[in-house]
Image (cartoon, rainbow over all chains, first blue to last red):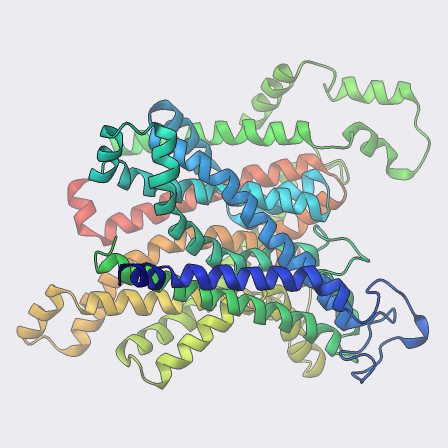
Length: 278
Length: 311
């Protein structure tokens, strides 16, 4: 019974892991599945409508839209995952140190965090990318600089609320060193909150990357990316609306999926917290 | 009085840190400003010319001196000249600021026109069809990229129907499409926020006691519950105005709307660093002022904070 309970309690995390793994797998195989080379220009088959050969038609340079969409997913969604993974990888240790060590370390770290948080996401990302130079890797770096602070904040808060709990005192009495206490007791506790925040962040990050790529600060043509595909397609909006609709709808569906999923995950944790489960 | 002094001190400190940060960013930025000034007309440049301009701009002195020099002129509201237009940066920024403020305010108005009625209705008629509609709206609105929505609106209202202008600035009509685009995206968040906040305050004890004293439903709702529900909403408004200023950048580019956002993107693409620096500073100052305003409104609305005098 006890074991069953743990499995049920960890269900959402398990589902999350499965979903993320399958999406990653999909992103990984996307270029292989893609029926055409997404970069191959074929002026003879420009702006073809939807057909059995080109399932979603072709763009103004005769490139297959389905292939570009699939490979573009790798860029848009893939870089989002990379950003969130690295933001957690940076934010988590800083949050742990800030919360657990306290003192001047905490004060200095929190000043930095507050300073970055005072600025709106978009403005920091735009200005940083602008200064580093437009390009996907610089965009990724800028967004990580914006994002890590949120995780540091969250982790620090959770650590502070757990630091004086009885089981931590018990662990100390039993002679665990701070490193063991952090890894064995505090990190498992923090991860739930971190994953909820990260899931809710996926949609926002996708929108941020697509927006900045659209205005030319992120992904550079001819590489496919959903935001830059929209930028290329906009001049043909009137006669070939599918060029605008397909990448846009792809963004909406993916963002919607992660937002709904994040909401469910958050509700689940809220319910558990309210019932005093933790 | 002590509160105000403390605030002022914090404000000064923040601006000082901000100035150091933005100065450092400029120093770290790749590309040589001297070369980019001189290479405007594609004429060949000699090393002597480069050296001359470098010392003229004071770029050959140590970084700390450069910073102090820059800070001194910053205090006098002199942020240098744009590399491209040769105009003072402050002048350029002030010229574009009204357009962005107009857009921001118009978007806030549209956001409220959508979210306040929809939020109130879905709180009163919880779980009815209107509540479901507002949920769908909130879900959809937060998943649609604003630049895409903007393009769709242009396509429908400017190209197909020919009702509204799609770009530029000038009249009330020019403001309409960009602010609707931004307003819808924000309203998606606020509908749910207003609903949740109202439902929570309708469940409070003071509402029950007002009911038992026989106050009319209208009075309870609009004078008690609504006011109580407003505090958390206004708190979030501070954050929203910040992200709204970020959102205006994208929207201004799409609608070729001549505001601060369009200016900064143009400056980024042309490596016009003094303008970018001026933009960072002015955004920082705006964000701080907005936070101060939100803070004091929050104080005014929440008697608990007012009596205790903060903390």
